[in-house]
Length: 156
Image (tube, rainbow, N blue to C red):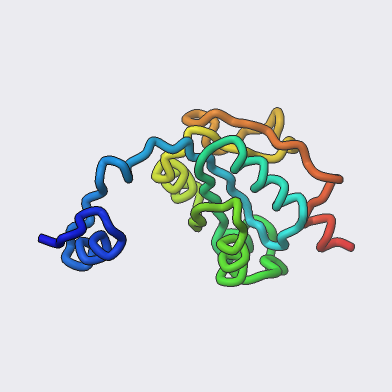
């Protein structure tokens, strides 16, 4: 066995050898939050949404639609930014811990459940409307910032 059991080098060696069982101190019960959307054209409102959602919990998972799904939902002129670029931007935002994609409603529900999130943060424009996940997550509404929306930006 290795001389220094709990050091960084020792953990790396155990992982390389296939011993990836987490130590008790590494296992946590984080409060995971879920946010989803197209995030086709990122703007300040999105950043404030992510900042708020991350403040509600310990971990933020963001789900985003595939390019194909965005085309199905919003038409052939969308998305403006390709999925690979949207993922790159989302992964660069410090409030987001994980980004996942989904190409259908069923896949969205699966990703939501896989995330372990108990809370969904969504824009206040969805108040009074059906919300995917409301039957198995607490829904928290976030007030829009200065009425910013991708649709308004694209239509300018």
